[in-house]
View (tube, rainbow, N blue to C red):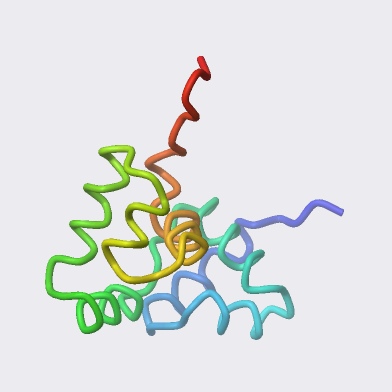
Length: 111
């Protein structure tokens, strides 16, 4: 069954503007956090400021800009994780949730 995402746009935009996370949106709509994240990104709706505030408090004022720069520089997930003191998996989650537009790093030897 294909979901008509556009019908959810106003609600998701409103909830994000109010600071809701993907988890909270998922709970509201009866879907998983991952599905809420995919829907939000497909609709082109940025994440709530809650994550940005958390990153600034936890890792410093320029943490999000640094993270974006490291992704653009094609640094490995492990390298970024070491820099922030988190696991490779956490960095992967950050990238997929907040920086998917930057694309994935090419593996060595791939075309």
